[in-house]
Length: 403
Image 1 (spheres, rainbow, N blue to C red):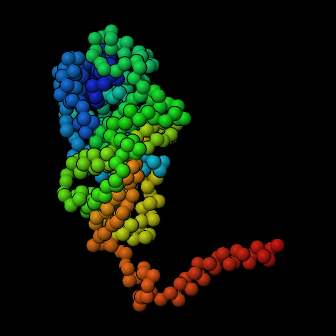
Image 2 (image 1 turned 45 degrees about the vertical axis):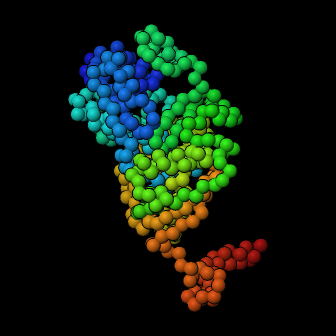
């Protein structure tokens, strides 16, 4: 099998795992390795990563800025559906994988590569997300998952392999956790976080200050929406990636968006994840506020019934599946009038809705008021209640006659 692969495209981050994988692919398969690094706003020195790949014998390195595509075509569609896995997790890692894998597959096809490779372990969700995407978009590509092939079982062994092969790394055997960062969030897993009773140490957090250290004065922010998408902050129009980065900064300064979750992985085990999603948390709250004004009751309730399934599909890696696309079409159809402005208050870790307005509002003061009105006849409620209570009345009568 290894002889049939002459060229492989590796999703490369420059970290310990993918640096070892790069050398391992060269040794094991005797093939040319093309490295692909996606800039999703992780804030790393991508030119240094490119130079490191070349130092390891890679002739072609793709480094691409995908931040605007990531937010516009992946994060925003997800937020339009209010996707939240198990009621807590805003899916920051989950939503990044389909874009990386899609672009990686495109490069493989362009370069005439026979295979693609990733650094996900055999225990995690990412292997599923990467490989479902490869299969959905380029089913003839072979997939090499080194963690499922090689004999190395631990981070310690990878570090020893790197030492033997002269691979420059910054990781150490004492590193207390693993981290994944993009423009939408940061996730932390493993090491010191594997005991779910232990609180995450405050020094691990990258995007947010602790709520205790946040300012004592709240900050109010206005977010403008058009058809379910955020387009402005405090009246200033911004591109998707710029808007999210701006809200990350505002939310992070006020300790917004920290989550500590024991979640159910798709592969069957529970794992403990700690997340920071400051801008995403603000957008989630603001979006809900505009929806409350503009969406019909039954449309809102029906859409809400779809959220757990929508979130599961994203978490489990089915972004490029027909069922996700069908759900997305339904969700987006319900967003056409979700236009307006939401005002949120940021204060010591909490993001609360402070106001909302829209020209498409279905809220009618002349009907909802507790003051005198000439629109709503309160006597109409009597028949409404009687008809809706009929089944309860019959049930109560049956109990009485049966006893």
